Amino acid sequence: GPGRTQFIDQLVRILLLSEEGKRRKLTETEAYKNQVAYSAAGILAKQTDEDIKRQISGDEAMLKAYYEAHKSEYEQIHARHILIRMQGSPVDVVPGQKDLNDAEALAKALEIRQKVLQGADFADLARTESNDMGSSSKGGDLGFLKHGQTVPSFEDAAFALPTGQLSQPVKTPYGYHLIKVEERKPTRTFEELRPEIERTLGNEASRKFVEDLKAKTKVVIDPDFSASPKAAIGLKQ
Image 1 (tube, one colour):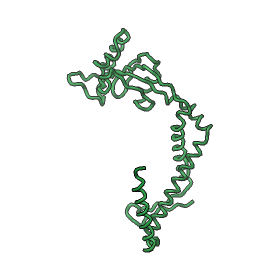
Image 2 (cartoon, one colour):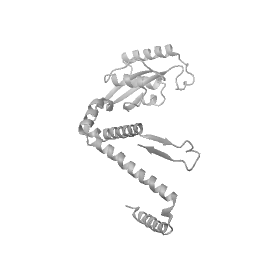
Image 3 (spheres, one colour):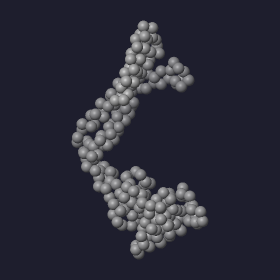
Image 4 (tube, one colour):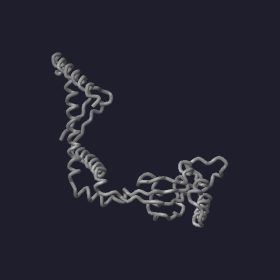
């Protein structure tokens, strides 16, 4: 690639200085030995971590079991909403509008819901009534949502809502929402999701492996570590 020449120059520089360091006997210094030991430990730790994750990626039964247990979490919905702000909401009050209390906000949400049921256009009402400035100009359009992108009460209601139907008012810390799901993207296939599942399970396996090692290893940390450059960490199996 375009960086090949620079890479070669850097490699030559490193090798030349390394040989000069040997000639000066810098390999016998404590600083050199400490850095070599730490670097070697880091390389070996990285390779061990990769080996743990590699074992997970080869466990076909585990990967498929995880997919079957969690595939609904990968579903996506295309939703619109209308937000009616209430007192205490982190959303700012629109200048000139009343700061509605809980009961007033709920009553307004129910009133708007009735208008939609009677034939009013949801997107038009979102443009004029919604207090979510980020989506109101787009007719309340939130685009496609994945699990975990919204607050729990909103997510639970939205993903449970049949396509094309209008929700009852859903309360969140922001106020009351009217939600309409316009489209659903089905869960991707196992093969499509496999790289993501391998990463998820690999990271979890590595984390758990390290926690297990900690539980059965006595870790001794010098209490003066943060104050003394001579402090050390000792491991006793």
